[in-house]
Image 1 (cartoon, rainbow, N blue to C red):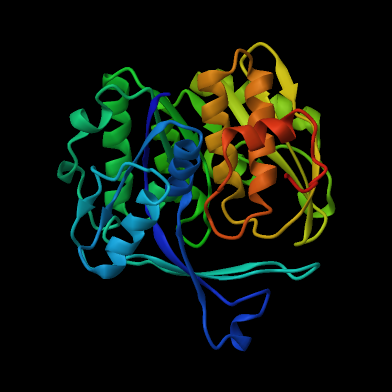
Image 2 (spheres, helix red, strand yellow):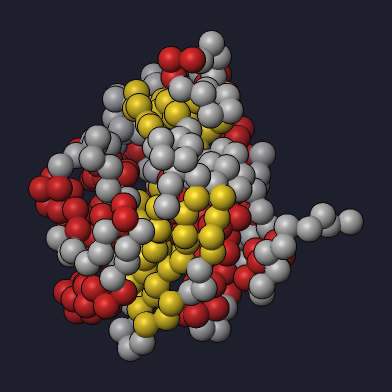
Length: 339
């Protein structure tokens, strides 16, 4: 399998048990996660040599974050140690018509204050095949944006394929700030992943439809995919197609475009256990698919099946292996007991 590098922030996640509200909580469940860390865990589970690059404090909470990655086979040798804080986010799980809620406490985290020259980019990208980042990392700070750009430059120097999950976060920056940074980074990107909101707010492309009403305008996506590919020269443009019937039930499918043809995946109707990390599991599944499958359609079907399974797993990480994903992708979604 391939060496794949991801760069970003891993955070401490605190959430009330079951589906309780914050005001009901007397204690919190603890897990670790973050966009690119989640991708690395998935890729390690599929057998890749997955590296996660970040900066974390030397204290026990920082070490616990590192340990959570090592537990699932992620290589952590290029995590710089130092700084004072591990970023925190609080998650209240939604149910039915009540949406999930996230509260961030991540200002001045170790990676947000890190500097690009703390990382040995040549060593990081030696023999690498793929580099993945998201729009969250450049949003956390000016230093985060510079680190992301230097990583992209180094990746292209080493001939590495680069993918991005646009991942707009309105609590971190404005659309104007996002577009000023993200449009510049697109010159290094081969595979662009993003949903309808991400494409509009980070790059200025708006599809049709209203996902809050369960509506999707497929022709609208095709138009903006063609525009995005023409403007930035992406090899692939990809989006998940989430139909939010409620916080508990979603329709889930995806679309990919390689500059010549569009491919729509099959659609899954999913009952959600934990949707956080769903997009990250899709990105990881797509990376694995594009590295190992002969067609973009097969790659996309693997990614959609992987992310459908993630929605059934508590925590940020998608704890499934390749065989489980392949079983679902081939049509067995019965959920029958495996003996």
